[in-house]
Length: 404
Image (cartoon, rainbow, N blue to C red):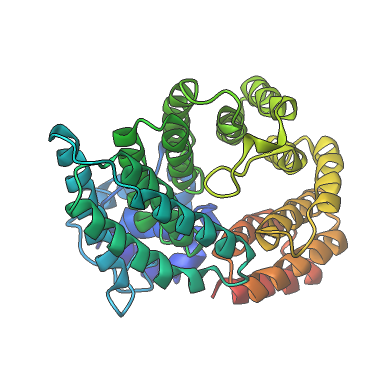
């Protein structure tokens, strides 16, 4: 019997086991396929849930063949093969971008500016769209056109900048739908294209987005490693841009996950230096970190570190700042509401937790945002100690229905 069979024998779906473990569903799928193994701190809890000793669990976690996971695999291709197509475009574009700069350049190509202008428009559409996946077909078409243009041009620097930009948007779309394999592939190729163009800020942002894949799988040390590289790249970028401050804000999240308060505080202080920059420090596309995000970033980190009073002050300030209808506000407001709900649950104030959670659930339903829905899973973990309370049970049932 393998891990998957043991999980089913204990009556767990991938979703319910992931919720009990406080990890993402795709993480459980990777454990079962032998692609990754649970980190040592997670193993005692996993063994307990599955009714195994640690030695029995270790036996189940022996390397297994990697096979497609049929049961609700969030990383599986869409029925129309769109993900396979976009992945092939990525690989083809990367191969071309890596080869052509070694050849003598033709006359400069001005069409790269057209691609960058289209990308900027797509970022605006993405931020304003209630349902993000409506942008996906346009992004896929743009990638195909960009790959075709690269094949016919030797002056690739401008096109690689456009590719590094567009790959990040494709990764955002995949990440919002919990398709982490596709997101990681997109961010990796974004970093490669940006490196070819020697565009350090674009490159650092691609690495930072890649770190989010590890963060949401609670692989804190892996995230720190990627973000350390991002910080080094950002230092070579434009000091007038907010890149290095965004990297610091995300580093604070990784350090909070590790329980390292001092490093988290130092990173937050570095992030707050974005206040010294002018309004043109962001571009509204691949770089959007500005002072308006500081309160929600600090509040979320204090929640993770258990500093609830400090967290509540920051999050209430953030809630007042994040207004619906101002690009990506469904996502940002939903995240702040979930953090406030978690504070209520930690304090055993179930009425407060339910009020914030239900507003966040409403936003998740209205926007179709996997990001907000994913954050709501953390609340289910906080409700377990008070599961006997009817209010907690009702709220948990609503959260389970949303997850399903």
